[in-house]
Length: 443
Image 1 (tube, rainbow, N blue to C red):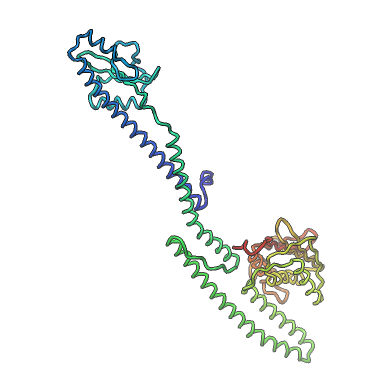
Image 2 (image 1 turned 60 degrees about the vertical axis):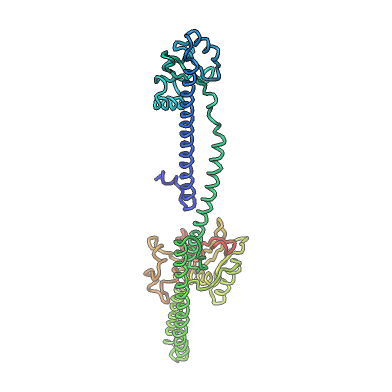
């Protein structure tokens, strides 16, 4: 598991590192192959030189007396040219002397061409020389061949060329991976918007055929969702009109009744039906087509508290000293906060307080009441649609959608809803929304 964490997690870096590893192995193989071929070429050249030198020396020494041969060899013994030495020469390296790769390759080439007597040695001081045991006019001798002109070339030009080639190839590979990854990033951002309840723009259908097909499928899904949203809006408008109209007539008829004992209860029942219907429509509608707007959260809270004050409900307001403008959906947020205050009125106890605070780049709307609170084991279940406490079931006018509507509004803003019982009694409901600088952050 730890080893897996070391591997890149994104497609871009995985493609980049995969290309880098492939290029590294390719360059290493090419450099190794170049060195091997160069070594074999030098071994072949030295082998041919040995054969030519032996043939030339035999021609020159043939017909000379031993004294004349020794004199001729002494006169032509130049240290930087091939020359012959007696087999017992003290300058000869020992048989156990190590040989380099080039000397070993030359020994193999000489053995393949059956040149010499199979004994090949190498001396490195005072200068690098190859000692080949040969048969010259019936006598064993050492043929000494200087290897100074076969020095290894500097590795810097080859390394620099390989580095430049690798970097260029990596740049092209990174560009290719970025081009492939860009539509996936756009798809990821669009999917995130869709998960928050927003309808993103259609994706550009560019890139390889697989990514084009993926973008086209996503765009078709967006079109279907948009069509469903339009049909749902039409359906909600029809339901609202078709149901509220007879309710309005029913309310009017009830208010004209002369029996006071029945009229008050029936008006309350009609109000409960209208409120439940409104909650159903709000839950189904979500944020609708409302766009994000730059809002003053303090002004939004003041207007909400003032609206409740006009209906005879006093809500305490506690605002932070400095609240910046925030990108919000004011109508959806007002409905959500209204649901929280209504719940505090219906199931809690006064005083009810609305706080607006700024904590760690989070805009927090807090509704506090002084009622009995909620049992700890039911704090999570009450957020689910149509879930109500036993005490709420005995109350009138609730549908179990109030907190579910608030949580959906929180999710559409990228925030969270948190419920907690207060030590002093009552419930503390916190609606935390990330403080955004603009709608571009949602993209």
